[in-house]
Amino acid sequence: QVQLVDAGGGLVQAGGSLRLSCAASGITFSSHTMAWFRQAPVKEREFVAAITWNGITDYADSVKGRFTISRVNTKNTVYLQMNSLKPEDTAVYYCAADSGGNWSYWGQGTQVTVSS
Image 1 (cartoon, rainbow, N blue to C red):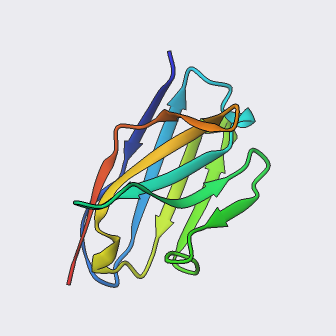
Image 2: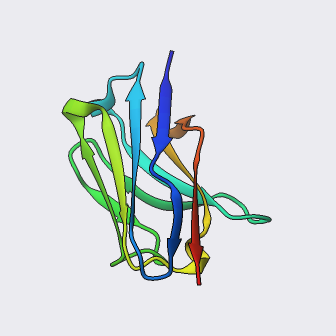
Image 3: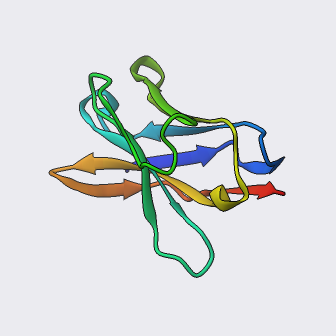
């Protein structure tokens, strides 16, 4: 059974930092592209960042230069380091794993709240 467990969210002031983690089980982690998405209240879920099995990264324009995605395949874990946080970054953050070209597996989400 595939399981992605998101953690690391919380309440932080604008300008602060948080590090999210996502621990995977039930998949051959090193073979999957991993990503982070987020969903703010009354908004659709949006792409934040992705990392391929060999470390190639991609970011949404809104987070470039502030967020860094990374992975440790030996720990089956993907991270999202978030710096210079803004109130508009407030959302539930989800990790996802790609399978067959689709984001097939999802974490349960972790709440990030940035106060002004």
